Image (tube, rainbow, N blue to C red; front, side, top):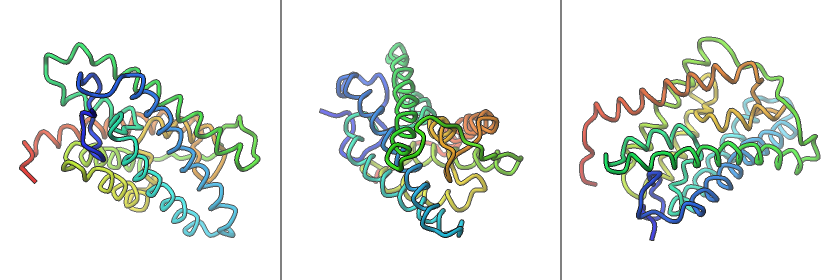
Length: 239
């Protein structure tokens, strides 16, 4: 039986009551691949159909991402917790009981699965739209505003993950990401695996390799702040 009820996102890596590790890793791999395929594929479709209207393209990209994320968390949450994000995995490690800290290395397998899945998702999106599978983005995303936005987006995401009541994480996470697409200057990557996948796509959703390190660093800082804020807010009450 799953360590989390259906739809409850925070399954902690290393939890002895969780499904077998091979099943968790498969869920993280294919879930992250599907998420990146949705993000990049919808960006390609949106750009082709929007007639140069960037706002319409971003709206279409947002809706596809929100719907896909909700479905993936609901479907794969009972298996792996549906992290699809290295920083979510690392943030959830703080939930481990001290006796379980020796199992924290399981998180490294989660992260490897997520990164590999992100690459597959980008390649699959390209293949479906008859584009070169192997490519790099030329879309520069730089500046202090965008880096601050990534920190804010990731802090908020981690806080939502850590404080979502049981069974409500799929809707809350999907809604937050959808909102953050629009209230952040960076359109809320909030995920190093997403940065990797989007770096490998010269499309609407892409990010140039030279911009990627700054985004990842900002996301890491934001995740740490999200965990800190969660602790400052204290224990969650009953729902």
